[in-house]
Amino acid sequence: MKVHAFLMLLGALHGIFLAFVLLSRRGGTNATNVLLSLILLIFSGYLFEHYLILEDMIAKFPHLMAAFVPFLFLLGPLYFLVLLTFSCSRMLIKDKMDIS
Image (cartoon, rainbow, N blue to C red; front, top):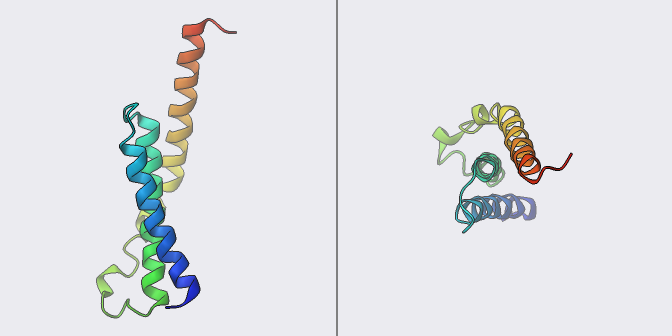
């Protein structure tokens, strides 16, 4: 196994783990955590696809070639929604505390 392929696999597994940690927090699954976990899962899938390419395993799983590329187009809108939900939650907290 090549070192950079191993790092791709490790990054993909770490992203999946972090996504599930975000979703399983005790404070509840607010919209920002759900959107951030979706972003992490998209990146993890893309890293896993590159791992398959680097290890020449894509010949065994040809149906996975470019399977995650369409999801990359969701990253921009997801980032926008994360910022929108985060800033709206900040505004709601600010309004509740009467801070100007």
